[in-house]
Length: 137
Image (cartoon, rainbow, N blue to C red; front, side, top):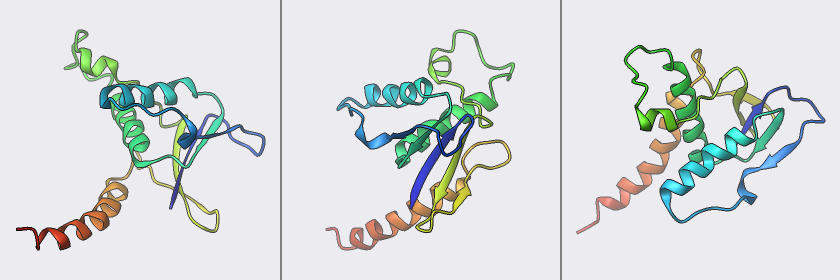
């Protein structure tokens, strides 16, 4: 399965970015910040093709941060929250693209990624892990 992020107005002339050709970092914090920057910098009428699960998780964090941004409990000095970009789900749209090229939106009504999308894929992967884990001494 392939995941595509469409940003802004998309048509047949829209530039396509390939997520996998960028520079990756060994440090996890730097890599996370790089993913946020990649999404923030490419925020005007483009398509990010072949997005991996990590990028989708990061985008989903930005969707949730955007959804709660008016919560009165958020403190102005909450450094961790303030570092998360707020991605508008009306501008950033996420699709699963099947082998026939058909797109299926994987966002729910609030704009975040459907829980089932992450859970189903991870469940399939973890099933194999648990099969082998049964034999670990």
